Image (tube, rainbow, N blue to C red; front, side):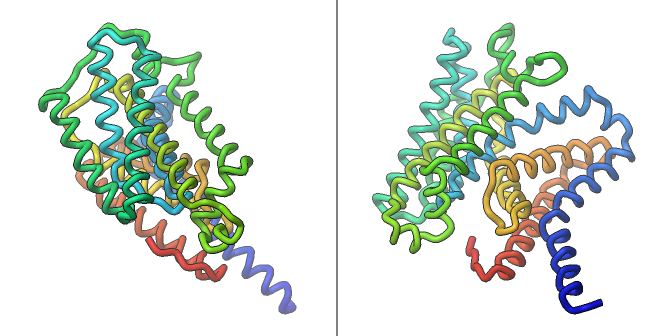
Length: 328
């Protein structure tokens, strides 16, 4: 075997392990756990898993949009919980579903705008600014719901968004796929989206081409906020209201893990809403499969931490291979 053949074989296996290996590993894990609990692969259960995954997918895509421009949003989980509570309260007050959805998006846009102000204008590090926003939003949520769950009933129009089906397919899944495709086209096919990528990947080069970092961060924070605000409304529809149980950190960590794990699908470890969506679906499916196998949900945070570490490790390995440095 000559040297060229050896190099090609080496490149093939490295590509298989570092990029396609992620997908192969995901499929293998779900198949292993699913075959141990045959009920997991029943059509009804799979549709339920798809439906359960959608909120996480939407939040993770919102986080990815922010990361694309080099930002970071610690307030994603708190914003989701706030808009879910607001949506449930607005429905109880008699607001119509379209108005509630618009209100949720508006709240998300406002939070994104405030985050941008502190990060871009005041120049507070994104981690610190959005951490403060996370605490503020958590406090506002507790003040709004007065520490009590908001339960909805007999709201078929509103519940259709989160619990309805078109044929065998959940409406929530259809909405999520539509949002994913629109975001993918926006980020990959428009000048604005490509400029956001350039700012996040190489700001020095972007600046030389006259691309504004402020504008890119403004769009990313506001778009991410709007997406998470809409997800909060859908969460209220899916859950028949809003709970007082805090899911802020759960959604934040899972969304971050999905965003980072999603980069391993690209040769250059580029953030991608499609990669993020696949990874979020895997994380949610893994949780359901573990429960089906009788594994305590108390172990799931540890497994999520392991997924996060592995995804970062794979990213670092690939970045070193192509001569890039990534600092989180």
